[in-house]
Amino acid sequence: MRIPLVAGNWKMNKTIGEALTFSSGLSAFLKEETRKPGWPEILIFPPFTALPALSGALAETEVKVGAQNLSWEKRGAFTGEISGSMLKDAGCEYVIAGHSERRHIFGETDEVVGRKVRAALDADLHPILCVGETFEQREAGETLAVCRTMTEMGLAPVTPDEVGSVVVAYEPVWAIGTGRDAKPDDAEEVIDSIRDTMARMFKDAAKDVRILYGGSVKSINIRGFMLKETIDGALIGGSSLDPEEFLRIVVEVQKTRPAPKSFGQGE
Ligand code: PEP
Image (tube, rainbow, N blue to C red; front, side):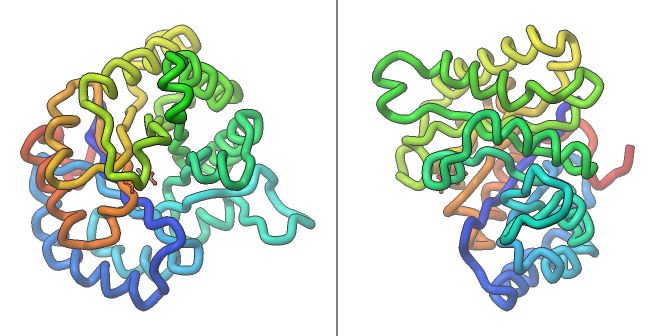
C-alpha cells in the first residue's frame, strides 16, 4: 500500500523562529484534520539548524521532519558534515539524497548519491532519492536514459528487502524553481519508466516504492499530477514556504487521492 506523500523542502530558508511561526500556523489545523482518515503523509525538510525545534513543535501532529542532506560517513574528521545518526538524534525520519541542487551546484555524482542512500538506510532513515534530467538532456531525448542511470546508481547499494523504505522523487531540473511544471502525462511516462527500472533491480518489491513528482508544484497544479495513479505525491520547494499554500496542496492531495488508511490511524 503506497500512502500518498507531500514533502516540503525549505532549502536554505527560515531561521528557527520562522520555522516555529510556520509550525504554529499548521499545528492547530493538522492536530485535528490529519488524524481523520485519508490524509497523505506530510513531511517538512527545514535547514539543519531548525530540525530539533521544528520536530519538537510538530510532535503533537503527525507531520514528520527530515533533513536535506547527509554525509555518507558515520563519524570522524569530516569538517562541516552531518551523519545519519546525528539526523536521527535531531528527530529526522527522512533525508533527501541527490537533490539536483546538490548534484549541479555542489558536484555530487551518482556514486556519492548512492553512498548517501546507503548511509541513510544504515541510520534507519528513509532516503528520498532525487532523479531528473536537465533541459538539454530532455531536448536531446535523453530523459528516460538519464533517469534510469540515476535510479540504478542511486539504488545500487540497496537490497530488495530495504527498497520499500526508499522514496524516489522525479524532479526535472528545468522545472525546479522555474514556474515551468512538467505535464502530468510526461511525468507519468518518466515515473513509469523509473518503476520499470526498479522492477528489473528489485522484482516485486519495486511495487512498494513511492515515486513523487517535484518541480514548480502549487495548489493550482497538484491535482493534475495526483490524478495519475502512478504518482504517489509531491516534493515541493517554493510553495512549501508559505503554510497556507502548503496546506492547500495537502488538502488537494487528500481530496484527489485519499489515502486508503490515514497514516495517523495506525497500522
Ligand atoms: C525542489 O527543490 O525539490 C523543488 C521541487 O522546488 P520547486 O517546488 O520550488 O520547484
